[in-house]
Image (tube, rainbow, N blue to C red; front, top):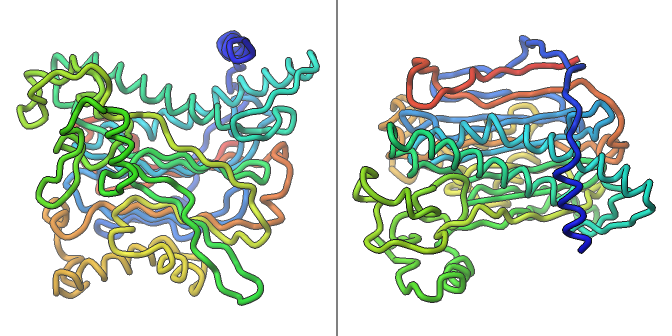
Length: 422
């Protein structure tokens, strides 16, 4: 009954337009060095950050963004920091779509939460959100994030439906989706796929900084993920197949949750003219992959130093603790670029080649040596983290970039820029 009432309120309230926010460009955006794009240092609502992307695919399939400032469409806030890492596969379209839409959906649903809280206060209703925090004290919620993911998935499915007659292969394009939101001293982590968020936490007694993995991964190489797939598809003995010594869902894909990959979610898109290698022999009645993110909530502590958000391309070469040690033992500036460099050095070592020679290999061919890699390091200033989410700051928006390509190449792609909104 109460759940239905809440859904009714979500649907009824419409946020005000963001008409008072003005966009402007800033000359302090990232730099390009061959296939590497980087923003060595910058400031977000809760501290400093570092960001870097290295391209391996002919078309960059990783997309990323950092949004700092207002997290809703209302001037009253809440204010905080949003980080997104979107590791695409099969093409760049889904990751680009997420990069353009997910944060906007989050702002819309955050605005509706504010309106709901106001009404709840008026009616003296005290409601617990799924995160366990009361709505009166919340500036963000698990439900807001889930709804933003759901709206993004639905938007991309709609895009696939429209483009299917002209471009059926878009049904086989998808993306992992890792999101972090820091707001009012609370960290929300939401994930689909196998990107990863790792916290660096200081142990005062020893001075060590320990690595704590925050995100749950959805890769069929993990036994618990295979068990989940068998549990949700008890009538399909081939739901997970060991192919070329790698566990894959239906022998096709390693991840079990994503945005996109509509050919494994809706049977009407798993047919000709989709390429035969993507088509299943038998029609399916329920979605094979899920778009429901794993979401966790963490109350940040003064000894929480930083969070590393990265696509799986980084974690193929570095352990959680190795990555945390690299960040902790060097200056903050350039942290993301430094992590990528060490990962590439490891990739070169595995192929018994010099790092300098690996750097000379062009995009496309480079994919045989490593994946696209995206890294965002979010440093946490305990004084800023604990500040009120209603404190107003200028909006900052920055998106990772790859090698510039002609504007008519596959999906439309926004020019990566950093903008400051007054």
